[in-house]
Image (cartoon, rainbow, N blue to C red; front, top):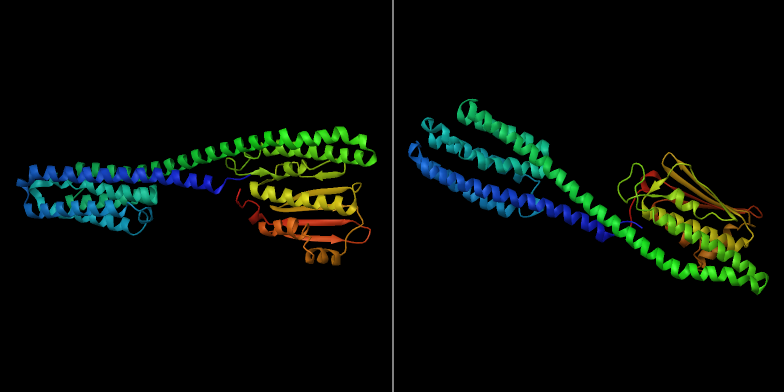
Length: 395
């Protein structure tokens, strides 16, 4: 069992919600910054050389604040060229206010810096901490140029801009990763609960019936004894499968939470008195969907052994991990089957091999070869490339 599309959607929606909250906080910061600039300039504009130009710059800042509020409301617009335009508008506001206040009001040249910092933060949120760092350095250079040198005020502004862009970009990444991890953990927990529920249902239903057949069938004669033996084998295999499924969502070395299953352990559960299973000593992690399909294909092959070679036939299952490629074979000691019979079965709609085995493996991106000879048994060989073993599926 793998994460359902709904669970994957939940991870995405939570991450998007966190990102949306950060951008809304940035919008609020920009509004407060432009409000602060307007109030501060209204108090100090008497010292400005070109007071009218200062009001024009502030009006442009207010207008751009409205534009960015609307523009950044759509997530698809938060990582494109608009970020560079946003930076350029901030730089223009810094230069314009510098011309407005002149040399006599150098202290007032810091009025737009707080507002221009919003564009730096936007770069950090949209493109990550490195982009925020570079945006902070570039805006800091503009501040130094406007002030005519690197004095204490300019130096403080540069440090604050660099810290704002890089740290907030980093915090944004951490927040999104934490949200995704929380959603994934919740999905894994839901899967675990669903496996437990199905396990109880199987235990209370199918396993009880198999146990009853195992106990009572021997009294029906030789055929009943054989039926009891088969029921006992299926009961043991089903109990092992349930136990394996309950660990399917837990971590394996080198995998994320709930996204891998040890297919070797799942195949080992198919072993019985007539089925020998050989798997690598180490775990063989694949996605839960791939593991389920491979186990189902092997079950279909083993069913064919009983159906065509008889209940006394033996079967051998071998799993090999060849540099990441999975090689899985199922061999029996039955009478074998000719290629003509396989083609005839497919033409007649009997899809044990073509559907249950070949169809499943082809859907995974793998290949199946069926070999047989008269009196030499049948071998089904499945090969799954490394590139396909970890793919997901509908679960």
